[in-house]
Image (tube, rainbow, N blue to C red; front, side):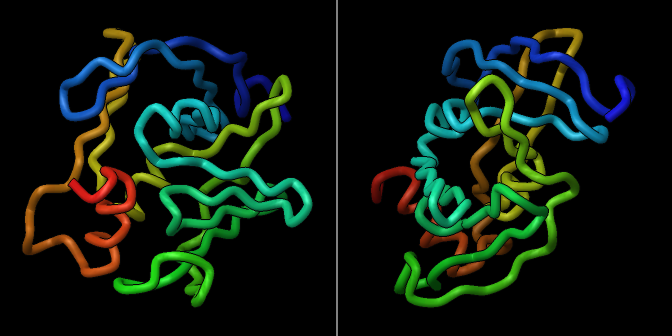
Length: 152
């Protein structure tokens, strides 16, 4: 890759619904903001890496291949988990292994769960906003959100 496609890892403040979750590493690749699994853990998305099958599960409902741009919805409104699998729109860039940690495209993954993401590079903030418009939240997204927030 050229330096225009990939930059070194940087730091930014991670916010969820205005709450400061601390500082996380990020990198840019192909114009996409990439976050490590630890950042998704801070958001409550419970990343689960399966190196044998080369996948990462997020929030118990989104599966990302670590070897390609493929992403899947696993489960459904009443059965979040691996019982069923639906293909999602491919990620804009593939997962990347950097310094022993997988980095995933943040905005693309957030869009699957209808989160709003704003990256203020100058201000040093990455803001995630939980979806709150009931008219736009699908039953599957609602089930995923319950999994993320622990049912609250």
